[in-house]
Length: 87
Image (cartoon, rainbow, N blue to C red):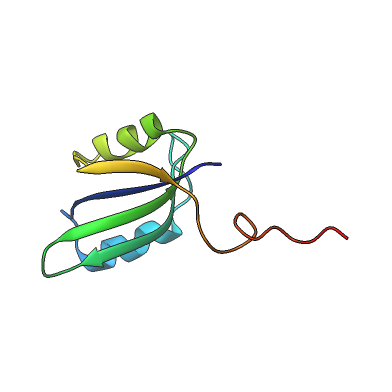
């Protein structure tokens, strides 16, 4: 599944952000991989598994969050970037 990175202001408390990491995929197929949060500026970067960009938009729209940007990314760790040698 594609991976997306987005950034937006955070209307949630820090403990709520931690809970999001453990939530299953939502009705749009979006699952949090990781969240990067700056408490002082109330900014959050979300790393998400999602079927497409539109699903990421809908995921945020349902809680009235407007992303400043959303981009598809490739993770530079794990099997996605370093496939196992099949020899």
